[in-house]
Image (cartoon, rainbow, N blue to C red; front, side, top):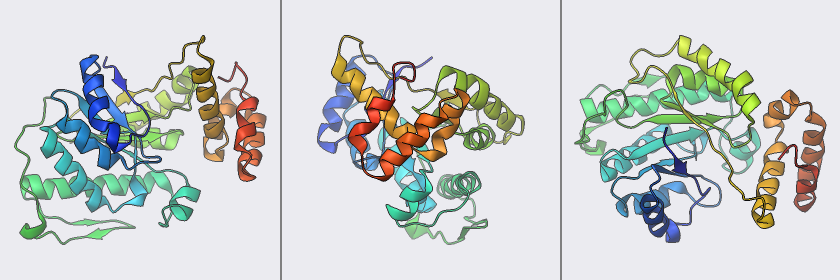
Length: 291
């Protein structure tokens, strides 16, 4: 088992110092989210400040970017770090993709499968000289000249692992099945419970792994499970976690977690508060049992 740290988003001005501290404390990895900062700005600083720390995105929003742009950014970070970079991708929800990023939305799991395929096709073109041809419902990619192709990576893929691992994040079983079938890892969303993981996500991962792409390096998707740590005798930290849970619980797409525990009513109330901008009132609906 590996123990990593995720601080959420990371201000680039803090990236190098935090990464050195995390490595010095003995953590195996550092995962950076895409919320109020672009993770791809902070990651090069974290990587160049460390020697052994693995660094990844948890997550970068796939549908906010072209898959070829994602592929090139990830390829450069892998080259910069000598293989210490992991690409974590998420779909976000429809409202953010359309109204925050201004991009088109479609059924997330099939579309994310296309993005992963296109990213790996670009990598194969650059690393192995394979023809760059990838055609699906949403993508028609066929142009990659030597002028736009980066040099091949100069480090081997570790045994049983991809040269650049791709993990995907999700709350529901659809993305868990996709991870089992196509990804190197599955990042469990912070909004989960042990019961939800055991009864919903693990069966979905197993279903996906039953039809797993045989070309993948590992026989199963690595499970990456976040845990909030907040000492009970430090109320500000506890209340910060309570606020985060209320934010996640307000998202209709994440309602399945609450439904499993018979707490869907709280989710509906939180959604109404969020819709009217009453963010400060939301944490009060998260009792200690939900927390």
